[in-house]
Length: 151
Image 1 (cartoon, helix red, strand yellow):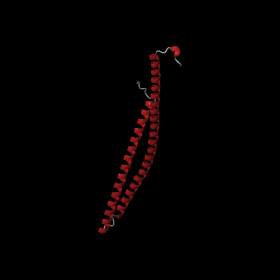
Image 2: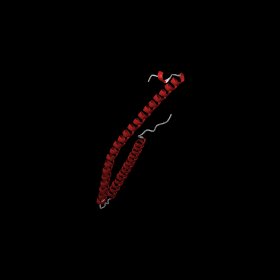
Image 3: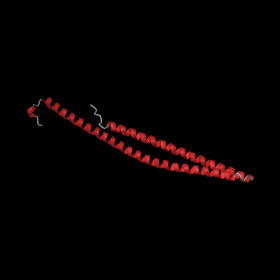
Image 4: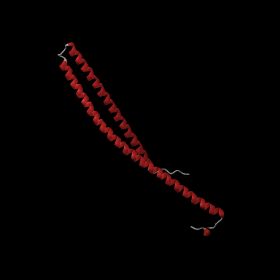
């Protein structure tokens, strides 16, 4: 049986490549999100360390450096806020990317269903063609003349 190629095979391959590309982009966004989370956590740990140092300095009686620690902690808190806003924007991008992936996946599934439908229709065509050929062979084997055939 001769296999007939799906006429939209190239479109199917392009959609598969596009879906892979979108998934790769989502994984990069997720890696960025994890990096931002780690950065935020490290800044929060640094804030805790500096608060502890400031409290130790106050307990030891060094009050002059208190303002310097407060300013530094405020700068670090600003960094935490900045990273948090970056995380919010990356989270929005991740949501948008999820929508793109869902759309690309649906498009791919449509093409796969069309390919399957094409395959079934082609098999039905081949089977009908073989049945016609078998009928003709049976008629020829029985020796029925052209005049006796009913078309």
